Length: 316
Image 1 (tube, rainbow, N blue to C red):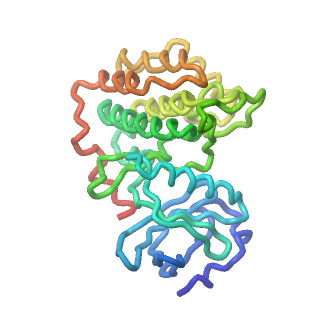
Image 2 (image 1 turned 90 degrees about the vertical axis):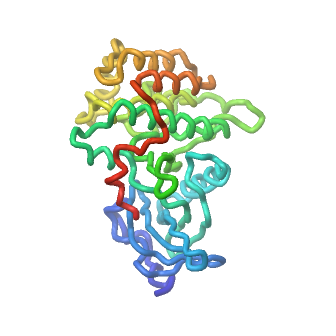
């Protein structure tokens, strides 16, 4: 097969992400300066699809993120730009190549395992232990610090955008999907002017109150997303079955008014308190927040296998 098999117009795929017809065909070759053979689709979300492929020269197994040119070509360009800038970051997938084929743009990147939203489903209680939740939080704080140092905010931190590594990297977690990212701090250190009204970005289940209120968001709002994600992983969220954004916002206010965690313990109560006192343009105290997560654990060992290690076979 060759690239001509994927010359269809992207408008033929009205469905989104993995629910759409395949963007790439099994066995097709993509790339000009380097050649990659597509093996199978392994995931998808939003308007994109993820494929497993192999570099025909090095035999390296990789992931291919594909998006139709017709949706929003700026999304994948933004994501590529950020990934390249974060090339040396330990919690961001590595980029190997990018290009286009027919009606689609693609990025070749490091192959990862399942996201932790999927991995949680393998647990008998549909939840993670305190220790696993703390490890997820600490690694994500490290990744967010790397992203924020460049002046960007992710704006869609959630369990399905946090993936486990595979092979020798199986104890490392990676933040993925930068399609909603925004640069808020410029290279000279100044912040972009605050807008009186900011369009909603993110996933309502996890976003901060500021995002619900259509306010300008900052570094701290990514950590609010992480906080609600961790709470979901360890004990669930009261608003998981609520679709209305205003009702979700109200439920979050109620939770935070007298926050207690039945599994993480009293120390975890300090986590949202710190966030509430962190302004949009403040640099979050990542180390202190990580310390709080460690203090929630009876024992903390970041070298142990994760409790999902026996189940993460999706991309292998």
